[in-house]
Length: 342
Image 1 (cartoon, rainbow, N blue to C red):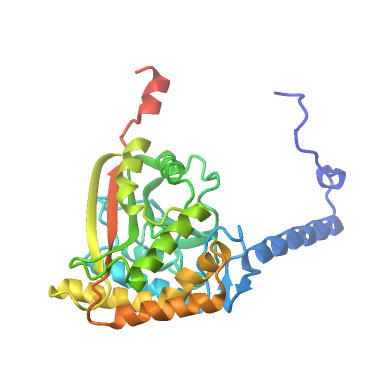
Image 2: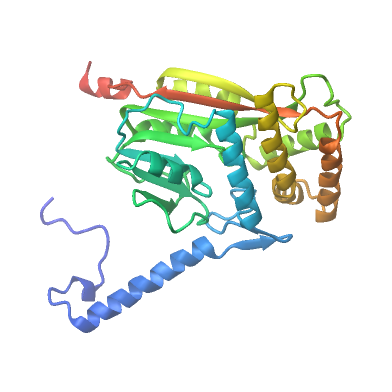
């Protein structure tokens, strides 16, 4: 209302009508100082047991963000693309989407490839770590953000939101899905692609006393103890339905580890999965086993070697599942109907 004072106090020099050149330079210097401080919060990475971890919201994500992990994430992207027959998108999105959001973009590889495929769309990827390349398509940009905080996109909603490989990252999945619902346009789509990290085998080769089974049980228990869910895949459809999405479609894909399947397509998937598993065991286990379970780094290394021996053997037929679920936001959602009195 007119005449009311602002709730935010303003420095006298900044509110003066005649803002001089010297004051302008001082203001720019002050802004630069704040910007440098914020950049430091993001890139002042933490090092632990020889691996590099994110600095922004330190400790909320258990995997490293160094070059070795970047390489593994790109292998994981290839693995998922092979599993999905090379399709970046499964949902039946519009031919010319205007705004696309990639949650937890990681290396940014999915967003970059989407930028090439949809050159007229504005594509935004967010992540806790600034590990994305600088040279990207003109319609792609990245920002450092925590998707579990309140989203600040306001009225600018998205035609399509993509959320992939966020197992062990999210503490409140229903809230995340609800934020997706709030920020996708009516008629727009959310697609979630995630894992069930509980190991299985089709022939009983993953016995209860096997090394891989015992490690996996400890890992799942530790991640849940830390507050994150390592097996969100089977629950994606339920969370999306509760949030209000309709026209839901859910698929489950087996992801063998190794070239033991007879089927040629599964054999290729298994080869890529074996590579990302072997490359990633140290990343998967070091932080969670040392921080949550109190293991020494030497004990974790010995455990990883034991897993490698089993995975390299011809008798271990380990696999886990990838889940894909997409759904559409109704043209008029329930809350909007209620507000209109319909």
